[in-house]
Amino acid sequence: MRYRLTFVVGLALGYVLGTRAGRERYEQLKKSARQVAQNPAVRNTAESAAQTSRAAAGKAFHAVSEKVGDKMPASVSDRVRSLRERTGTEDEWGTSNT
Image (cartoon, rainbow, N blue to C red; front, side, top):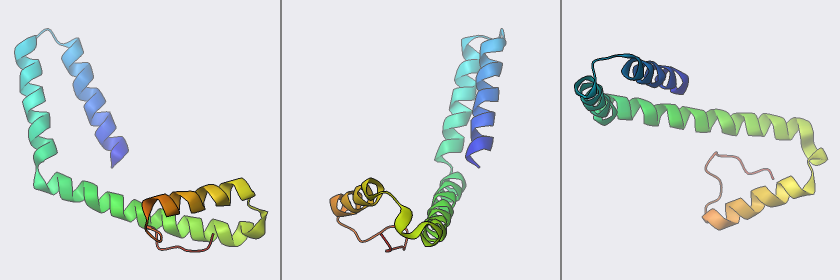
């Protein structure tokens, strides 16, 4: 979803820069982009994608940590622990094996 959005934004930017319509067309596109960004459906989709990616990252972390086991450098595991302590939460991804 993020890559599609980036492509659409790039396409719109290229259109604005490449057109001779001037400031009026730029303002029109800017207003449309703002309306899309404020649309509740778009916001819900973005939040859903974020939650899905967090879940996938947690599963990937679990799978990798099972395979890597004790071979992970101490500096990496220490960094993960310090980040968890700083946030004050157990783990946002649902994993706890570090």
